[in-house]
Image (cartoon, rainbow, N blue to C red):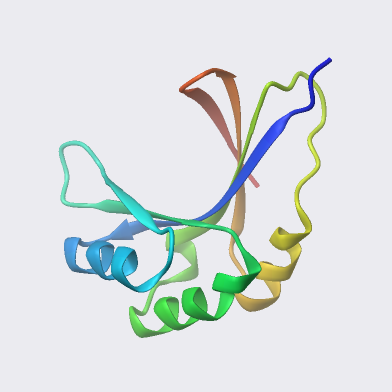
Length: 115
């Protein structure tokens, strides 16, 4: 049995274009994806403790609602349980948002589960 590969991102689900480009410019490693057939962008920030202050400042300055963000945990190569990294618990002390889990079935595909 192979060990699951887990990635964790802070996800901002309702950004406009200016917020998306600001996110990419202000937070190291951040990127965004434009949703098809809309003017909404999804921002993704790798969950690292060193970025907590930058992320918290961005959420406050951009007036992001907690309902418009989550912590996205994705696991690949798993058919059993996954260990969620401690960094998730630490971020929840800064920003109280929901958790979303994705389980990749194959490379490039995943299913999501909101908590």
